[in-house]
Length: 483
Image 1: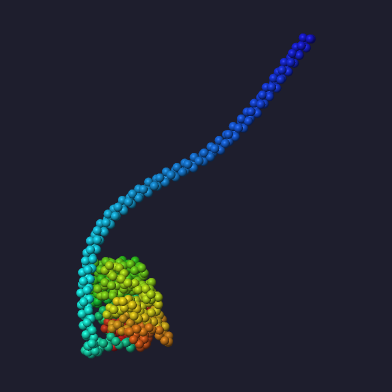
Image 2: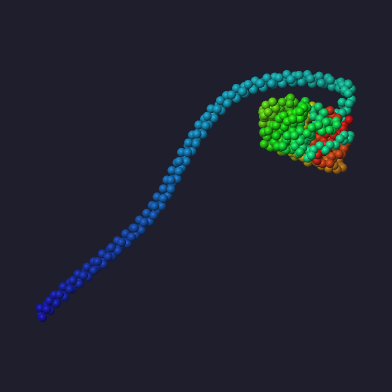
C-alpha cells in the first residue's frame, strides 16, 4: 500500500504539473486570443476603410466616365461645328469673290452713271437757262395780262372761277357703298368705284351711266383716267390694280404684286407706267408694256393716297397712316424728302395743283394744308369747327384754276365762327350733306349748299371747270353745276 501511496503521490504531482502546464497554456491561449482579437479588429477597421475608399473610388470612376463621355460628345460636336464653319468659310470665300466681281461691275456702272449725271446736270443747266429766258418772257407778258384776259372767251374764264349754285343731278350710282370718284382728263366722263366691285362710267353732261366695268374681286378704292382718256384704272382691296380700255370696256391689265390692300394708283403722263400705293407699306412702279413691276419702294408706313408731282412720273408724293408725307424718286426708289409734323392724324389725300407748284393734303386731324413743293413749306392751313374728316380714304382736290379746293366731311355743320387760317387762295369743303366754299383771300364762307345725306368720300372738279362731282358713302353722287 506504501507503494500505492507513492504511486498516488507521483500521480498527484504529475497531475499538478499537468494542471500548471494547462494553466500556463490556457494563459498563453488567452493572450493569443486577445492578440488575435486585436488584429481582427484592426483588419475589420482597415476593411471598412478600404470599403469606404472603394465606394469613393467607384463614384470617382463613374464621374470620370460620365465626364469622358461628355468630352467625347463635345469633341464630336466640335468636329461637326468645324466642318460647318469650313463649309461657311468656303461659301463666304465664294461670296467674297462674287462680291468683288459685282463691286468691279458697280464701279464701272458708277463711272457710267457719274458721266450720265454730269451730262444730265449740263442738260439741266441748259434747261435752267431756257427757263430763265421763259421767266423773263413771262414777266414781259404779265404786263399785258389784262389785255390777254380780254382776248379770252368770257365763258372759259367764268367756268373756271364760278362756284356751284345748284345740284344739276343726283344719281344713285352703286348697289353698295361708294369709295371713290374721279373726272376724266378731258372732262367728258366721270367714274365711281365702290364696294360692289364695279367701276361705273358716267356722261358728265347728262349724268347717264355709260358702262359698268367688272373684274375686281373686292372693293374699288380709287379710280383714275390716263391723260388721253383711253384707259381707266382701279385700285382694289384684293391687293391688285386693274386697267380697262375705254374703247372696248374690256380689262387690259391686272397688276398683282402687293401683299396688302391697294388704296391708290395713277397713270404717268405718257400712260406707259402706273404707280400704286398699298397698306403693305410699299409703292410700286409698273411698266405696262412689260406688264410687271420695275421698281418697289419701301415706305415704312401704309400708303393711303399718292400723286405724281410731274407728268413724266419721276417724282412721286405719298400720304401715309403715320401722318407723314413723303417724296420719292421713282427712277432710283430713294426718298427725296419726308415731311413730318404737317398733320397730327393720318393723311387721307394728296393732290397737285394744275401748275405743279402746290400740294393739297387732307388728314384725319380735320385740317387741309397747301404745301409749296419747291421749298416744302406749308403755305396754307384750313380747318373749321364743324369740319370732320371721318374716312381714311376721303379725297380732296384743287379746282382747275387752283383758286379752290374741295374736300368731304362726315361731320355736322354747326353755326359759329369758322376756324380757318387764311392764306392767298380759296378753299372749298364738303361736309355731311353740305357744300362749303371758302374764299382763301378773305377767309370767309361764300356759299353753303346742302344735298348729301351721309359722309362724303370724294370730290372731283371737272377739268373744264363747269361741274363738280361729289360722292357720298351711301351710294349717291351729286353733279354740281357752276355755269
